[in-house]
Length: 281
Image (cartoon, rainbow, N blue to C red):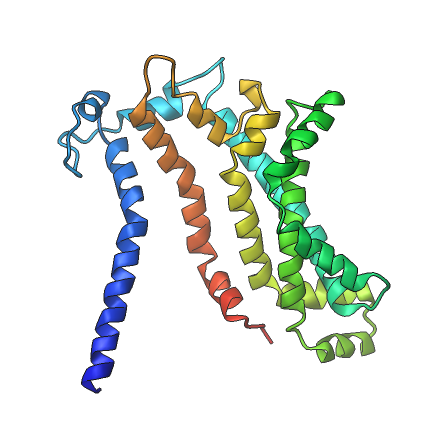
C-alpha cells in the first residue's frame, strides 16, 4: 500500500469517526440525563457520567406518571396501532400502484408518475390549515382513524415512487416464466414479485413507520383528548407551567427510540440489500 493510499484511508476513518461522534452525542447526553435525579439535573452538573445513577425517571415515566388519567401505556398503544396499520396499508397499496406503473402501459401512466413526484415537492404544512378546516367541519377531529388515513396519505407517494424504481430492476423474464406456468397477474404479484421484494418492502416500511412514529405536527393538530394522544404528544405533557420534568422527558425519549433502534437492527440486512439495489434470484 502506497503512502498516499494509506493517508487517504486514515483521513477517511477519521472523518467517519467524527461523523459518528456528532450523531451519537445527542443520544449519549439523552441517556446520561435520563439516569439522573431531578436535583442533579438542576445542579447544572457538567459531567457526562451521572454522579448517582438512578432509574427513578424511567419508573415515573412508565408506571407512575399520568395526565388526565392516562399515561405511557395508552399512548404507546395508540402510536403502535396508528403507525402500524397506516404503514401496512400504505405499503400494500403503494406496492400495487408501483407495480402497475412499472409493468403496465396505460393512458396517463407518465402523468400519474409525474403527479406522484410532484407531491414530494409540496411541504405538507402548506395544506395543513385547509385540511384541518375540512376535517373540523365534518366533526372528525379527535379521531385516530383520521390520523391513520393522514399518515397513509403521507407515506404512499414516496413509497410508490421507491417501488417503481425497485420493480424496474426485476427482470421481466421472471414474470413471463410464471405466466407460462399458469400464474395470473395477481399470482405473479403475490407469489413472485412480493417474495423478491422483501428487502425493498422492509426498508420502505421502516422509513414510513419512523415518519409516523415521530410525528408531532399532524397528531397535535387533530388530536386534543389525552386518551388519544400518541407518544410525541405524551412527551409534551411533562412540560408544566412552572416546572419541567427533564429527567422523565429524557427517559421517555429513550424509551420511544428503543423500537426504532430494534427495527433498524432487525432489518439491517434488508436495508443493506435495498441500498445496494440487489434482487434475490
